[in-house]
Length: 167
Image 1: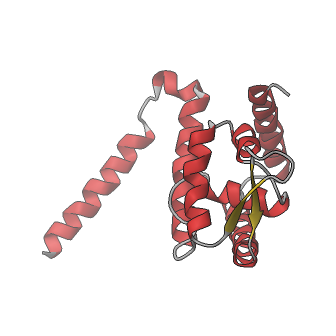
Image 2: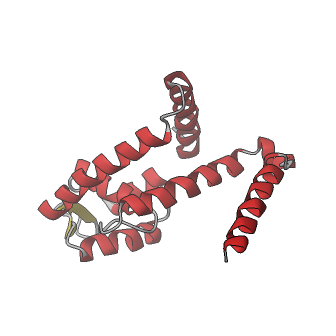
Image 3: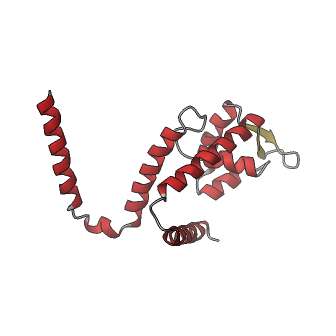
């Protein structure tokens, strides 16, 4: 049994050296490769940090919750536009928030066919807890990156986001 663990450690160390020298080819200069890798790392970490929270697991619930908390009466179509998703996807994201008692859907008083979303007291408390967790995660993730580089990265990402939204 001890020999097996020793062998596994050696294999792991060898694999680490092999991966360090691995040529990435076209991936080396492909934004989507790095974005997907960072997204995987952040999502995995976030799932661990959010364990036990209603917004844990899956994508989109945190963003929807925070937007609804910040903008009472926001419409699902507005959230869809902000997150670059379609309306049916947003409906699937909002449904568990409503079921968990974090968000309330109401028919618009000015436009009967339109739904508006409002945070509940429970949802507001969850949003505050989530804000603290995601802020800490962001700080931890960028802890080793100089502020100047982080600011530059966010400037570029904001520029790409605005272009995608046609702003």
